[in-house]
Length: 364
Image 1: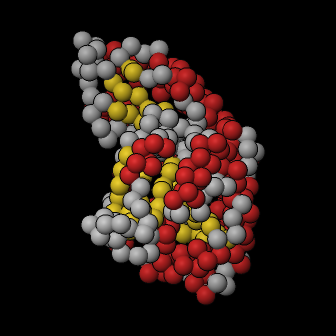
Image 2: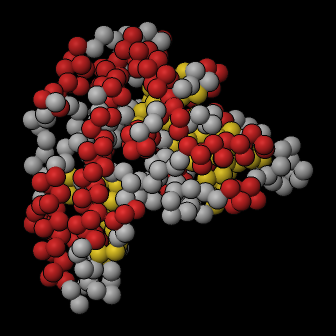
Image 3: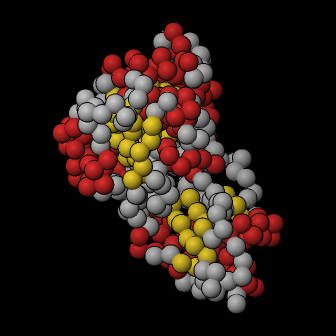
């Protein structure tokens, strides 16, 4: 475990996201020693190794290394929705819809049809089925449904896990209507570790999947998309036009290999620390959270404005200035904490003490 010691960890306790993770000592060494080539020509042996390992891990024919999860999702959507007048169905709280700048519409002219995201991160089958457009279209006024997108774990729903059974039920619905299924699996490994199953089981019914190496898996850069050989062939062309051809990217892929071999064993500890944080936060008057609903490494709370005279951004500013704690508070009452390998149980206890201290000054 000593290889995971990171001497350059910031003096701040940073729980804004697991994207803040720094590469481990073993990753840095692997990057230094990486054998490289030109990946645009398909010559980089380390990238090829990572892609082969990732495809096997996900149970897919092929995989592609891309710079980011946003690019991975965009490439996947554009590959599936490869004709004008295409539409995808996704949740109103999904990362693709909420946080990716409308890239599918901006760059691919793909129409988004949103349905309500349930508290557990699922979309109701009945909600999906009632908005699927017929193919071939019976009316020239309407776009044609080509794709459904799911998210596992679900970011805005607090790291909720989609079960194998649920995803398979959506897969059956897609087959029934002749449409494709994409999984935004940015934190898929967290779901697999918590359920103690192979990641491939979670995406058996999916035509494509993306997952991030640069979140809790701690690589400095990169994501993977996977699917059929033909899908990846088309995806690689799109990666190029989007500026994702990175040449000697084996230096980055070397870290990604350790992301999928070394880092998953640490995710369970992240989940346990997140649950400790959730239980502690639930004991603080003025914080609304159901601790038992925390499943993985994301904890979401709301500040109760009836009890507190401080909003989330102000609390974030005070925690940063007074205690060197960084949290994510982009909404008035909502705060998100994301736990990762650089956060210890002692850090969790410190965070809880300082939040209690700050809130005690703003009670109504």
